[in-house]
Structures are given as structure tokens and as C-alpha cells.
Amino acid sequence: MVLKTFGWSFAVTAAGLAFAAWQWGWEAFGIVLILSILEISLSFDNAVVNAGILKKMNAFWQKIFLTIGILIAVFGMRLVFPVVIVAISAQVGPIEAVQLAMDDPDRYEALVTDAHPAIAAFGGMFLLMIFLDFLFEEREHKWLAWLERPVAKLGKIDMLSVCVALIILLVTAITFATHAHTSTGHADKSATVLLSGVAGLITYLVVGGLSGYFEDKLEEEEEREHEEEERAKREGKQVSAVGLAGKAAFFLFLYLEVLDASFSFDGVIGAFAITNHIFWMALGLGIGAMYVRSLTVYLVRQGTLDDYVYLEHGAHYAIGALAVILLITIQHEISEIITGLIGVVLIAASFLSSLQRNRKVAAAEGGSSGEKAGVSSGV
Image (tube, rainbow, N blue to C red):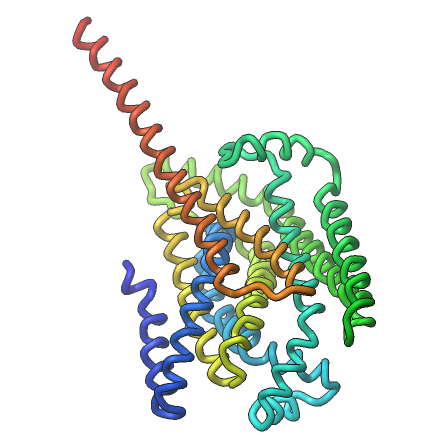
């Protein structure tokens, strides 16, 4: 199962590292390897959240996610995206931006750094909305009950997550504007931060809204399918889960791609702390993206999210932490080590909590079974 799911990731890793060593030498080999590990550590929470969405789709759209989706993830966000950033910032064409990346990597890095406030505001707001909508929703299982129970009650207020996100964005933009008065070169970026943050919010609402709309439209069809499945079970026929298809799956796919793009912001920006070489960066982050995709499918096929009920909670808390970190990095530098460790620690903690819960449930069920057995033997 592991080899089948991660086979392509292993193959791409071997080919990518071999190519880097052959084309650029052992220095490139080491940097590409480091970037791959960086991307995996920063995006593990991405895989957990993706799995929660992907399991709603049918087999066809899951394959699309692994084929077309990986092309978008690797080439779109890890190669084209940095070039687009530079092209927009420097007001040059994409070809000129690539030439700039190869001929003047220091200038290339400076342009990407200059565009960071807009990138961080957009990605931070998108991720923040994901976290807030999760936090304000009433759920059967509660990991941090002392926090999630009262917050879920507040979530009954319409559009509360949007209001909270906008307040945070306003505070961020105002703080940035205040900071700009004591700094140089940032006087005109507070408006950019505000506009980019609103764009991230709108992107989330549009993509998520369309996805939810088509999910609702297919509810009747799903109910009919469920009735057919029940009928097939009664007749002894084999039944397989189909999952969402058509327009609903298409917009869920779009949602996944935008989500992946937002998660990749920190990886792409963080990669510049390691290298300015655009092709080393794309290769290393691309290898990491392959593992994130494979891990997503593995979690879906193994039913891990159903077995470990708090994993999704941990991933969303990691998303919230990443959103806050992105907004903070508009003004202050934060080490990628801290960014990666926060996500790993939160997910590890949720996994351990899930294990403890499973043991308690198993013990309770064992105790109940023992009592029933005792009663039966007594009778």
C-alpha cells in the first residue's frame, strides 16, 4: 500500500536529486534535498486538510487531483508563481523575469521580498478564513473542548468569521502603516496589504461558496444514490462509495488548488532563505509537493481521519497558526524552523490525543462487553 501510494514520489525524488547532482553538482544536490524536507515539514497540515476534502470526491476526481493537480502544484506554484511575483513587482515580462532569476539572483530575491507583504496578506487571510470557519462550526468531536464549545456557540452568529477576519486585516494594515512611518521603503504598502487581504477573503468566499452551492444542488441526487445503495445491499449486490462528481467535485478541486497555493506561500518565500536559484527551488519544492499529494491520498485510502478524529483539529489549528505567522511576517521575520515546528507539534499533539481517545473508547467498549458477558453467563 505504501509503495503503491508513494511510488511516484520516491521515483521523482531519485530522479530529481540525480538530475541536480549531474547538472549542477553536489551543492545543488544538498540544497534540493533540504528544500524537499522543508516543503514536507511545512505542508503536512496541508495533506491532512486536503484528505478531509478529497474523501468527498469520486475516484475520477481523485485521479485528477494527482495528475493535473500535481502539475498545477509543482509547475504553477513552485516554478511559475515566483516568476509571476517578480514580473508584477518589476513590471517586466515573464521571460525577462526568468532571465533576471538566472542572471541576477540577488535582484530577483529582492523583488520577491518586496512583494512579500501582498503575498502574506492574501495567503494569510485565505488560511485564516479556513481556520475560523472550522472553529466556529459545531462538531461532534471536540479536541480542546474548553475553547471549541463556547466558540461554536458564537459561530451561530451569521458571517462572524468574515467579521473577525476583516477586523484582523484592518488591525494588520493599520499596524503596518504605523510601522511604515518609522521605516523606509514601506510607506505605500499598507494599502497593498489591505487590498491583498480583501482579495484573499473574496477568493475564499467565491471558491468555497461555489463548492458549497453545487454540493447542495447534488444532495437530492446523493439521497437517490443512497436509496439505490440500500436497495442493492438488500439484494446482495456489491456497493462501492462513489463520492461527489460533476460540478461539485470540480469546485472542490478548485478549492483544493487554491488551498494548496495558500499553503505553498510560506514554502516558496522560505526557500529564498536557502537559495536564489529558481530551478533548484522549483525542483526541491516540487519533490516535497509530490509527497504532500501522496500523503493526502494515503490518509484518504487508509481512513486515517476517521480513526484519529482529532487529526483534522490539529491540522486546522496549524492552519490558524500559519495564517497568523504570515500576517506577522509582513513586518517581522520568522524562522521557517518555527513555522514548520508549530504545524508538526500541533498535529502530533492531536494524533496523541486521538490515540488516548481510542484507548478509552476501546476500554469502555471492552468493559461493556464484559458486563454483558457476565450477565449472560449468570443467566
